[in-house]
Length: 484
Image 1 (tube, helix red, strand yellow):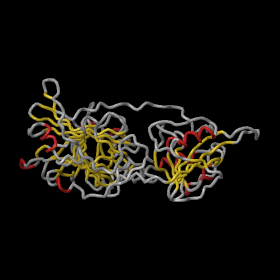
Image 2 (cartoon, helix red, strand yellow; image 1 turned 30 degrees about the horizontal axis):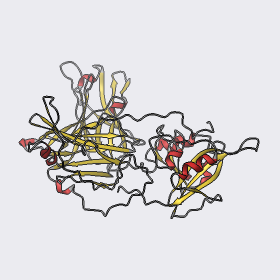
Image 3 (cartoon, rainbow, N blue to C red; image 1 turned 180 degrees about the vertical axis):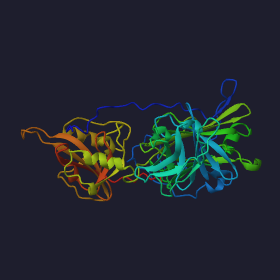
Image 4 (spheres, rainbow, N blue to C red; image 1 turned 45 degrees about the horizontal axis):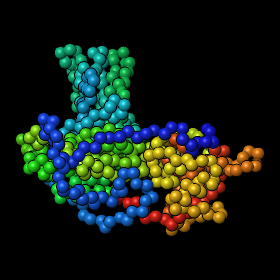
């Protein structure tokens, strides 16, 4: 591995997303009406997208959740369904609310999960018989949690055949574990009369599991927005939306086909329906509160809403700015591959498995110096000399210490900069890496394009790639960004 591991090799430009105005648009393509003058209140304890992680932000006094006030008009899913069909777009997913109705969930792009499910909620999988070969004598649905997890096989047939000679299929029910996290890997395994086994799987066959813990964003009819819980990469996101907001924007018309548009990291949004179809006995379907898994690589999220009302489209988008939230980094070792990737490296001989945890995935969006400045969407590298970093960190209020003091003072923020001495022993130190010290004295480091880790001491990264600590920068500790 190159000793220039901390330097950028790729600097992507984040894609942009069109942000609709919060207004009403006639279906005939006429000029949009002027947006309503009502202001959108924002009670979230998240900071606005784009703000540095270290920005001074005082958390407001916690207020009671408004989610309960939207019940029973807003329902959570009681179970999920997934269907393996044939042909393009054959995979389909639905969420159900017992006795109320169901909603069709958006599918994937073919490169990842096509299904959504939730920890502790049942997932029922059905398979089109046309997916099975006529020579199949046995068919099973095979599932396991990823990462880790033990493989479980569920029979998909009772042995009877249809008019085409294919095995008739049965629904397979999966009781998703209460502590499920990550992906549910689904595949169809068939066995022919000769004992030959075939396994059908691709990434779009997986289900993304919303774990038990997470955050709820509440959009109430008094035009307030509140974030309950901690919005964190890899965790669950629930959206509780009061459709009376769109009713007002549509001039009193009852909205139909209400959709939440959710974008992570500026990527094209997924459109999650919030309106349920009527359930059994013709009961009104009400509104659906989706449970989504926040992508593990997410650092920011934008939300906006749209709904139809008698031929008009209403947008609820904070006057076209969208509702924006900062996404916290994932739970420790949320994905075991982060730690495995670091342990395979020969660049850090002092870094032992028990000395660090992975707190974020590999990424080309930002590097170590950006991380120390609270930036997760660009590369920052001011030069190779220590003086270059003195100037950079001075813009953030940091001052270089006169000595290499690696001790912890909870009242101070410290950045530790590493460097390599010239091989001939003469000349200037070449800076290679920067790490941020937390309130417990541990260090967090983005390792080039590799994972973001938290390690116990500065010596963990001492070695041939980064050299050793050469400078410590300090400033008074800023109030923590709190979106819990």
